[in-house]
Each structure stands twice: as structure tokens, then as C-alpha cells.
Image (cartoon, helix red, strand yellow):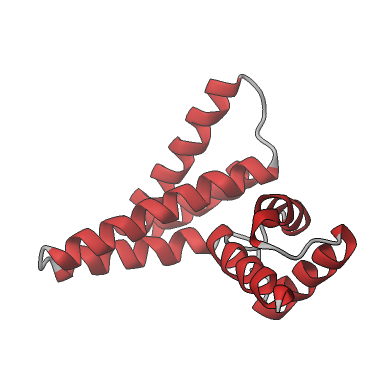
Length: 150
């Protein structure tokens, strides 16, 4: 389970004196634990991945805000935290793999217009299950639907 791996990594960071890594891992553990308490059950791996992605998105937003505010040192700290969080995500699918899945689903559903975006997007996200970022999938599906119309 991810929480077991996190606890081991927290101990390693404590022994190594890596305070930034330690605080990042503790925040992630806390987010996972709080979600588990709220749901009153063990989290599935998809839910754990979703929480990690949410944490990453928060870091990305903070990086942008710090850069706009001229706070380069804080933006760099957020970048390091993002890299730490990414260690706990499964390997991402390549754009080519996502394109193949999108093409197959568009062909299977017999769709071809932008009006079918939601239907195709839902089917593709169901297939990639946490192995691809939603914005990347959205961009690829949109491109495929627009190109299939012509």
C-alpha cells in the first residue's frame, strides 16, 4: 500500500535529515489519511493517485503564483516538492499510446464530432485509469475529434 511506502520514506528522510522531503511526505501522508478518515474505508489505488495528482496541481498553481510575484526561491521549493510527489505516481502513458486508445474508442463508438467529446473523453479516461493526465487526454481527444470530422 502507498501509506506503508510513505511511512518508510518518511523514516528514511528523518534519518537522512532531508527536511524538505520529510515535510512533503508528511503532507502527502496527511492528505491520504484525512481522505481515508472522510471516506471511512481504505482508499483504492485510483483514489490515492487522484490525491497525489491534486497535491501536484496545488504545487503547480503555487509555482505560477510565486513566479508572478517574483519569489523564485519559493517557486523552486515547490518544484522540488513536485518532483518528490511524482515519485509516487505510476509511469505516465505516452502521447502515442493515448492517441491509439482515443482513435480506437472513436472508431468503436462511431463518433466524429465535437459534440461527442464528453462520451469519448469518459471512455478514454476509463481506459487510462490514472496513467495519464486529464488535460493531456483532453487535448488529444479534442484533436482526434476535430481531425475525424475533416
